[in-house]
Image (tube, rainbow over all chains, first blue to last red; front, side):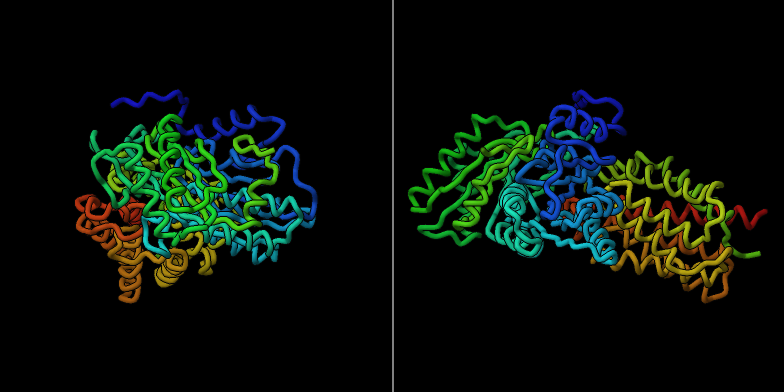
Length: 330
Length: 215
């Protein structure tokens, strides 16, 4: 099928989308270089700066979370492709200016990790105070080989809040690590997306099928099955997540539902309703929740379900104010 | 004289760039079988940078400096793992001191240091259906030819043949690394786009050196 997207020259896609993005929120974000989004008003000197990197085409992710209480810098790559190490190094150098330190938050995808590792070696040679945290919470893969999905948003939120409160680099890294360790995500897809630069579908899926475990770029999962209802899908996914997390009665959970781009809020509310019912029946406390489009994959239909075991400190940091273009808490 | 100087280096990258440009759509089509279909675009951008970095304006810098800088700039293409690894290979080639002109033995060390730089970055090995299926045999073939006393052109011809055979062999492999591994058996029957690119790169190098020898 012919691609139907409002784009200009695909070569300029990322540049143009970022220009449009910062023009939309001029009081919150700006471009500091090609592909690099920073806060319009930088955080106070000496506080830890949060930097993330990742491919484009997932709007509002990841640059949508640059703002007070969350990220300081987002380095964007091409469509679905990691930014290169040189840009990451520049972003980390800039973040460390004026006596600050930087926490680099990386979603576990081959390209992102490669660039991050090369960049880390480079800034370590320069003796810059930088630590890196990897998010790898997609339970469709075996431990040690899990992708980073929407859980990064929770990491940005709590580590960002800690940084605003004046926590040290080690403390921010520990908070980010604790959030990352306690979260689990599973994705489901029902319809593919078109790669906006090539015009090709990024995966194939039968008309009556869904796939559980689908990655952010249409990487195949393991659970291809006939399309199920909202309730059934919620049950299958939540059960796998709870089991993987080892959640038990009395645990306090954050639940995040992330629409992939073409799945309606209507559907997400149906799914969330069932999740809340199931948790109540299991006497697991739903303490915080968020529903929306955080990291999308173009017009892919499906969603990601994230659960995270919270403790009082993580809850407090989650509740702290945030003012990013696509994540506000007052 | 049988050496690679900045003139030959420029020709090598120009030939490789030309080949990649002509095969750009093939690369993207291969990538869309196992990945997100942007490999051709990434490679075009990478080759443009390599062509520029080694071009006539790449004046007074030493060959090693040129390669290191070119590699770092290729990493800046933002094409995910492909450009990060190709950039590491080129920059790693610059870790060997080449002086103004490299003979066959020096070129062998140069390719080896490029390969080592990639191996430092990725756990992928031949057999995983990645660029390593072409890169490892290509470098090994070049080293063997150099040890055998072959000319630069002959050694590069062997390397190109080995890279091509390696890339072709990926058709019968199941992806075990990178984003494609999630497709498992579905990747059978298609050559790996990254390995195909490496084969084009070495083929370009070989054509350029063959032309130089003719002159």
